[in-house]
Length: 172
Image (cartoon, rainbow, N blue to C red; front, side, top):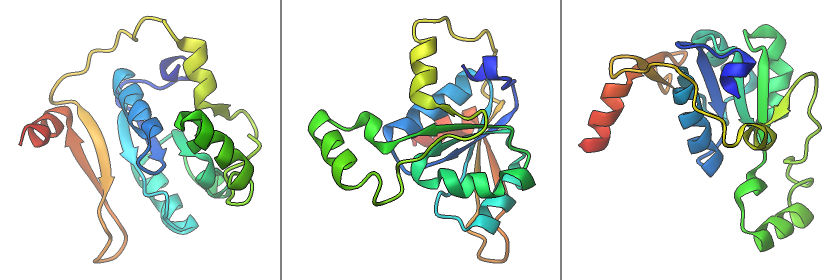
């Protein structure tokens, strides 16, 4: 889906969400497309989020619905062309999903209406299920991940890691 949307090898894709199953799915999808994951703190303020998106140059963002409106508020001041949204409830067990929908979704800001040409992550997954993986060659020295420093000495900076570095860190 990402390749068909225009993501090419080396492109940065911002992931703006908490630690959820969708984060892991998005991360592997970006890597399969040859992209670089720009992991952006979803709790950033609008100006911090704008800085991070401009700093990493992401043209695509995969965002949890709770943070969708914040992304849309600053999108026109960033390189973002594509926004993919996902809702926390999508991977909850049925009973919890129902409780979430009834008690929290609207009240806490998870219920959104997509704007412009934005798409749902779940819909992209359904549409592309069973299709062959993209024919993109990704090697150990290719860039894999951008993490932002804490910004303790000023504005946060983008730190880049390779696939090899991530494998080594996992083995350690």
